[in-house]
Amino acid sequence: MAAMTAAQSPAGQLLSVRDLAVVFRTRTGEVPAVREVSFDLARGEIFGLVGESGSGKSTVLTALTRMLARNARITSGRIGFDGADLLALREPAMRRLRGDRIGLIPQRPMTSLSPATSIGRQLRWHLDGLDDAGRLKELLGGVGLDALLDRLDGYPFEFSGGQLQRLLIAVAALGKQPDLLLADEPTTTLDATVQAQVLRLLLELRDRVGSAMVFVTHDLGVISQISDRIGVMYAGRLVEVAPARELFAAPRHPYTRALLEAIPVRHRRGEPLRTIPGTVTGANRLSGCPFAPRCPIALDLCREENPAPRETGLSLVRCHRAGEDL
Ligand SMILES: Nc1ncnc2c1ncn2[C@@H]1O[C@H](COP(=O)(O)OP(=O)(O)O)[C@@H](O)[C@H]1O
Ligand SMILES: [Mg+2]
Image (cartoon, rainbow, N blue to C red; front, side):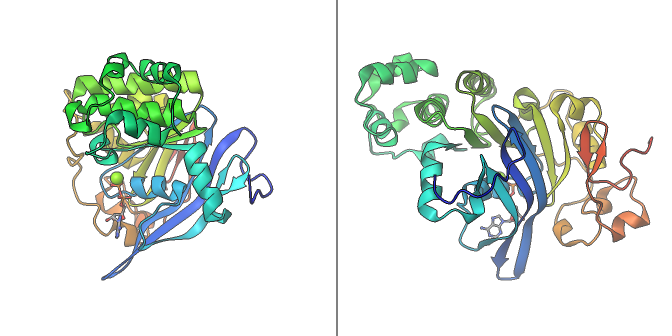
């Protein structure tokens, strides 16, 4: 691979994001969408990124592929991927990486497929010919779509959302067997039963292919089913990173606690998390802790100074009061 630099990922880590910051230029000025985001991902590990709409999840994910919107700028940070410095790679090398080693599972399968081209033809586009009938059978069988083998001349609208999502997962995970899979709310448009099937499929593929995954969702139920580790985003920052079980058993950041408390007993999927008082608007411009205006335990210090991440138990928490017995 071109443009290799000294190994930047810590030993054993596939992905190492350090101090990532992204701003968007808008008519009303610059919007700091992502700030001081750092996390690592081991091979085969699933990292869930969760947070309210607008917290910066998609921006982090698209920064990892360097496919940000034109008005976006990465203002600081380093992204180490298997020893390469992603932000220093030339575009052709980055394109190869996106094709071979970093796979993307889209949010809406329908919009990622061409409506006027048969499924079979699109599979061939995505998978360099795919002439080998045996390989196609294996690929579709691998995501429970054996029945589609006889329907390859069908068009996307003739299939269900769940089938199309499986198809795209087959392409992204099995076709390319990437080291890293990125998924931005890949089950949000599916109904609950199909969603559960797709999540199971992703877990199964991780075991089979060994891909690591960054999985973005605003749904805590979904994130708990799929993640090994979870990062909670608030106003562009990662406010808590913890092993999944730890996060649910012992949430440390007041925002994480509020999120968990906001899950209704019978959580209805797809509903925005908006039962926490106050609003996130403008929080990414505050100088202190972005959550301070909504935080039930904020001190004066919290409004003045943004807390640095602190190790608390198994978690990394950005809270001045982390570790206090509250
Ligand atoms: N193309 C864009 N131009 C300007 N602002 C943007 C653009 N995309 C996202 N943003 C802003 O960046 C912030 C983070 O957005 P996003 O990463 O999409 O959040 P999430 O995926 O968590 O919903 C939001 O404040 C959003 O309004
Ligand atoms: Mg998003």
